[in-house]
Structure formats: structure tokens, C-alpha cells
Image (tube, rainbow over all chains, first blue to last red; front, side, top):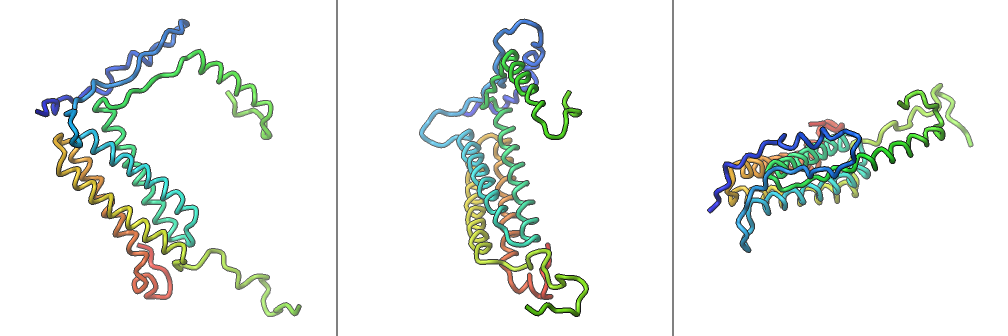
Length: 136
Length: 92
């Protein structure tokens, strides 16, 4: 029934995407591992489980963030900051697992548009109050 | 109107940091956070016990264990006897 347990998709099978730095602005390939299939039934499956827990972690980091802004004394703040960081890292870990399973598709931005934005904001360096020595 | 003149430092009694006290607002957040973590650890454990893929299962279980650890850490801040046994806050 659940026959894709052995699908451990290679993470770097889309390396060619990052190499397209030529002058031609061709459409970028989406970045995604082969999608691990789950049963399409009304019952929650593995993807639903991890997706629900990912949402839980996101909700909790939001809530911890608010709490951190309101904590009264330093020892409490430090403990909560540690808990926040571990929860945030757990969110990242679950996301990474889902990416490995092929449940996330990433769409690279067009190089030309990135370059336009870069030039635009590079121009704003003239407005810096501390000089421009650090701008490459 | 009369300033105390016995001290050379102007604000000898000024608190540089808030004292290690749990405020009303702190306590409300603490109980909220305990509730989130209790639900999260139970949910993660339930999901883990129903997951098929061993990789998914182990990550879900690890997540649940983290929330239990956080629950215990947060709970310790509500323990007045432990926190103020010396009159100062004992950081874990």
C-alpha cells in the first residue's frame, strides 16, 4: 500500500538550475525532488501529519515572538529565547524533510529581474547616512 | 525637595534590570505556553504512532520530545518555591 518508503530523493538532482548564469534569460527550472506519493484517502497520511506539525511550529514561533517582547525579567527572557530558537529550528527541520520528500517546489527568480532590483537598490546607496565604503 | 546627600552615586537604588519576579502578564503567557506545548507533544506523538514512513515517524517523535522538554522548562518558571528559595532567581 505504502510503496514509496524507499524513495529517498537525492537533494542535489537539480544542480543544473543554479548553473544557468549565461547571458540568455531562459525560464528557470523549478527546484523539486521527486514527489513521494501518499495515499489519497479521507484519512490523514504522513504528508498531512508533518504538514500539520509544521503549521503548529509556525504558530508557536509566532506566539513565542510575542511573548519575548513582553517578558518581564532577564532570566525568563533568556529561557524563552532558547525555547523559541529550538522551536524555530524544528520548524526548519520539518520543512527540510518535506523538501526532501518532494513536497515543496521552489521557483527560482528570473536573473534579469534580480539584476534590475540589484541595480535599483544599489543606486539608493547615495542616501546612506554612513558613507558607501561597504557597498560593493 | 530634599535630596538624600549621603550617597555619591546619584541613583544608588536604581534597578538596572527588572527583579526576577513573575508578573501577572508573565503568568498568563506561561500558562498559555504550557497549553500549546502539551497539545503539540500529544499531537506529535499521536501522528508519530500513526505515521508509516520511518523517517517521518522519527522526526515527528523528536518534535514531540522537544515540546515535552519545553513544557518542563516553562513549568519551572511557575514554581515559586524553587525560583525564590534563596530570594534570588535560580536560572536553570
